[in-house]
Image 1 (tube, rainbow, N blue to C red):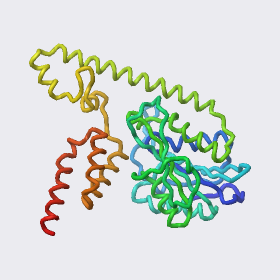
Image 2 (cartoon, rainbow, N blue to C red):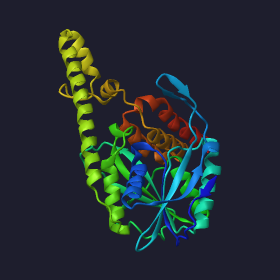
Image 3 (cartoon, rainbow, N blue to C red):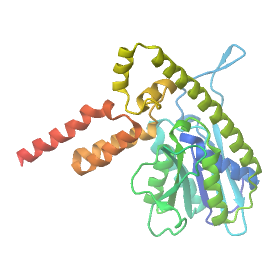
Image 4 (cartoon, helix red, strand yellow):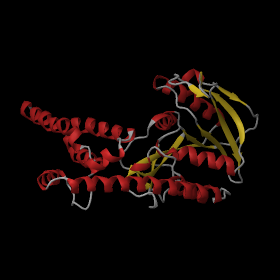
Length: 335
């Protein structure tokens, strides 16, 4: 349920929406804008009916139930346009996705929203010190904003960020998703570096008066945290090679055959074991989607193989991958 808190009349506002996803990019961007633009409360979303409790809270040894859950909708009136901001704290249960997002869309229709902008992360093999690349997807080619950003040719938008845009398109509301690269080893961390690359673009396009001082401080903290993590990984890697050197020559040669890189490096498989690597949910979803496409059209097998190799998980999917060709061969014989 959405409860209006302000009677202000907005003029075809541009909406920024995000729920907590990989890298927390969208939430960081929106909360930063809310703070910098001193946005006011427009409405409140009571989402308790859409949430299925999956945990409880412990404080000083005492267990408490989950507190009342709600999210606020903010607005800001700027010189050139009105803006609405939603940085959701919780995502509804999957079986409530459609009902929840439809309620949000109905509210946007009442506001006569002209555009909805959401955000998504693209895990990549860039370093956290690299400048991340941005991509964009639109509900229609008629939308001319962000033309300087490269179009994303293939992918998916996770959670309510994606469902919301799909419903927006059906409701004739223009929608845009801005994608940003993040290092694969930062998927479980808030990434201010990625948020910065988006905020700079938004500032230029919408003429937002924002100061990046606080953002620079967050990037510095983020950088220090990554350095500490990589230092720890480096120590573990050195211990790993020290163990190798202590092996007998025969055992060492056997291990060497299993390494895919030079002895001065470490294989991706070994590195995954050392840092407890887990495949991000977005990558799993993309792989599953490519499997589905390849089962219908074998031409997608090449793109699927590249994606599996990118994440170093081909061995885990090898049997399923080869079955695609057996299925395709059987279909050819039947034809």
